[in-house]
Amino acid sequence: MLHAKRIHLPSQEYELTEDGRALTTFSLRGGRIGARFTLHGVDYLVRTHRFSGVYELLDADGTAVAATDRVSRSWNLTSSGRLVPFRQTAAAGREYTMLGDTGEPAGTIRRTGHLHTEATADLPGLELLLQVFALVAVLLRRRRKRAAAAVRTASLSGG
Image 1 (spheres, rainbow, N blue to C red):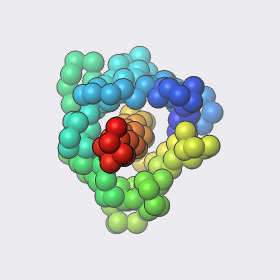
Image 2: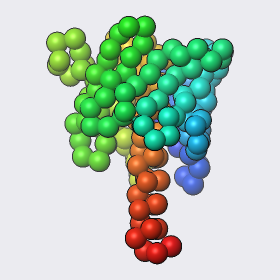
Image 3: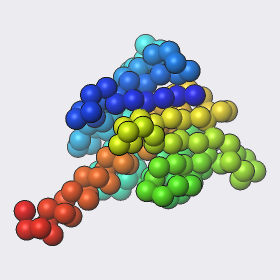
Image 4: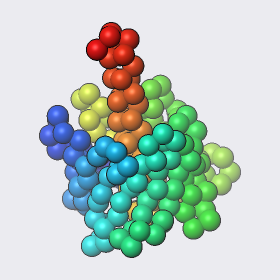
């Protein structure tokens, strides 16, 4: 099981552990860059397509390893011709369920912790790199929705 915990509350930097041992760190950044992380000595970039809500996982050479549809109530992760569906199963995107080949629940991604500053991913059958990517995509979606809400609030208040 993966566990992401925000390192410092005001920042968007997370420490990622797998079954209690340190795996990597990543920071959710603005603009077209979503997050960078290193896994088993290889650098990866999660690129955000700003207006579409689509995310791509790129390796160090810039080659696309995986991608998502628009991350929303239901979305798909695609890698090497494999399609992995996810469905929102709790309000406000607090939980997503990964569906297996038969359409039955096969794993989950949950936002947890005080102020939802943590997240866990239990995605058996999915390789570690794709588990990390799915978890980062859910956290990026949350950041994107919070930023959009802040813009709406500012525009409605005349600020």
